[in-house]
Amino acid sequence: MYRHLLVPIDDTSLSATNVDVACELARTFGARISFFHATADLGATGDGAVMRSVLPGNFNEAALGETNALLTKAIAGTVARGVECKGIAHTSDHAAEAIIEAALENGCDLIVMASRGARSGIRGWLYNSQTERVLRGSPIALLVTRVASMHPLSAEEQALGIIRDEHRSLAVVIQGMENIVSEASAAGQAPDYALLEPMVAYLRAFPERVHHPKEEKYLHRWMREHAPECEAMLASMEVQHVGEHELVEQLASQLALARQGDAAAAGALSGKVMALVTLVRTHIGFEERNVLPLASSSLHEEEWKEIAAAFTENHDPKLGDLSSEEFLHLFTTIANTMTAGSRRDVGTS
Image 1 (spheres, rainbow, N blue to C red):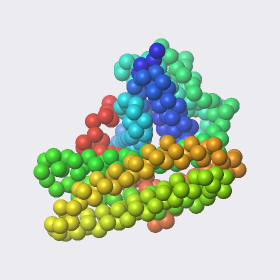
Image 2 (cartoon, rainbow, N blue to C red):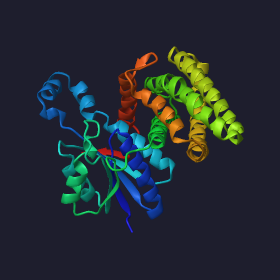
Image 3 (spheres, one colour):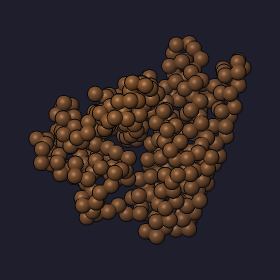
């Protein structure tokens, strides 16, 4: 029986679906997972060499790219399912070779990948010809969970993949906030306000203004039409959305006051953070265990197409007051901060 899975990841829906399959396999086998991402060698390019010498801080952040964001999201969702995992990052322009090397270095006995098959695309480079190269070159068993050119993702899979991926992003931010206040409390100090600020900004900008409203407008609307027995459950979820919004706004106000030296706001800040952490975790857990499975059994492909289209727009150039690039930068900054600070489960080499 397999005990240690290596799961390469990128930022595509196909990768997110592969992560879900790998998690279920790990639960079945009682195995652990090492998530892997290969970052291109920015320093080997002309622009990268100039950036390294002129702006070393900017080079370090650019070189990391989305690596920590991808790994921390995969870890957050997997830990929530009770599966032991860690993240690994290599700098390499040869993904297949890096995947095999990582599997061997970490004692993995199964590589779990998906393949795009005949399809191509820059964002899916990891799942283009890389799977075939791993298959030909790896002494370790390879499980191909899907060949997208032969079995494309359904609208339901696309929609649920995006929703769950956004839940993982939210879980990462919440975990970061919990780390900050817990470590400050253990040291008898005030939490780091400068680290909390971008996390609160993310919660105000994305889950509260984009994710939750779209769930209610599209997913909940169709569930009410096809499964009216779920009304009480959906009403409860929407009450939680309101409560989460109110807590985030209160937290933003208290954080601003605490930074101005308000002792009462500073004293109440940690308790407010932990209340929000508890609410968000409970909400996501209930939704993924109850609401999403009911939606899967109740909605039809046409409804899923509408839902998928609505959530896919979350990656379009403009989302309210911020661009999708600004959202990505904000989240990446949070993930990099967590990895460089209190988190120990993401390693780079």
